[in-house]
Image (spheres, rainbow, N blue to C red):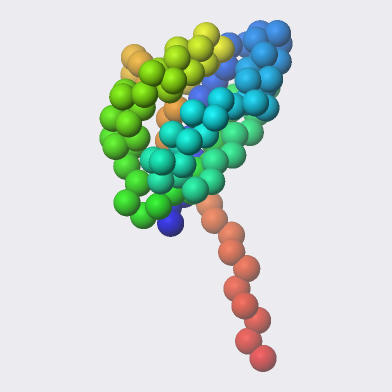
Length: 116
């Protein structure tokens, strides 16, 4: 299993952020299915201010390229992405058209078992 952490900004408008939260409280069934079909087992999105942080856990053979190809062939996903882009804005320094940007792991703490 792989874990990916991604970031994206929302437009800094409280009304738009509230509406974005409403959509994510009731994600379309086709979107849920497309996420699972791509090999994503778990997805969480957190919000602070207008910054989004997403954690995905995926199958070992998951690829962003395969997910993008699947999404391109799904009218529902295309409608969802077009709708969501009304709320989203690229992170500073992003290339044109890039939404979610991967984050680098810079610290990890794991408790070690105590040996008796």
